[in-house]
Amino acid sequence: MNYSPSSKTKAQILVVEERISFTRYDQLVTEEPLEIRLTFPKQTIAVTMRTPGNDFDLAAGFLYSEGIIKNREDIEKISYCVDPEIDGEQLQNIVNVTLKSELKPNLKTLERHFFSSSACGICGKASIESLHIKGFSAIPLKSEVPAEVIYSLPEKLSNAQRVFKSTGGLHAAALFDTQGELLKLREDVGRHNALDKLIGSEFLAGILPLNNHIIMVSGRSSFEIIQKCITVGVPIVCAVSAPSSLAVEIAREFNITLVGFLRGKKFNIYSGVERIKVSQKMEYP
Image (cartoon, rainbow, N blue to C red):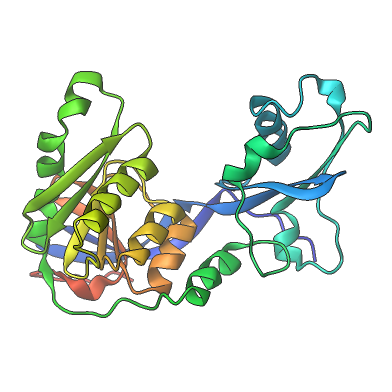
């Protein structure tokens, strides 16, 4: 069966505004892993999380920007995987690239992009399963956090972004306690880097795990963001912007409360609604 992943994924969410909440359907940007393979030498050279679409452009652009190819003629063929032993859902997540035979690419520069999986091919389920294999489990429900605490986080994060105020070009990751007190903030040009800095700081201070904390990021929440939060046991993750489909999937799998579009007196809850205390609920069909 042919499978073509969409750039959007439908999900049911709980919308919280002021003291009222209601359910509705939302469109998430799809996040799927793309594995880029060379046919000769036969090996995987990169795995990257992306929104499906223009995958061949992505593969070619990656190879060019990394210095593996220099001219269009260096690529003889780009195609999706046709291996009959790989599940149809995964075929569209694997791109095979055939370079001209006389090209001898230097692949050592690509080592930082690669991660391996015991699964055949790669898909969102394989990425999630890898966390189970490493021993991570669902985060237990301990206490509720009032919606008013969640409302207060963006302003506190923004006020603490000192470098951003002078450059306008940085992401931030902030650590709060369950009363909404800002404990620490780190900034970086990449939101994943900012989160790594925050986690590394707590690791060196011997404060992990972060079972009674909230993390907020200044951009969107992707698979990598939630994955990192799982490793330190954070129960509530908030973001200014939207989550991806795989971020929601992994948050639900590991019982993380995932909050998105946190702006002013409004936010969406994509998973783990039990941890947010809302004064009044209004259900819509």
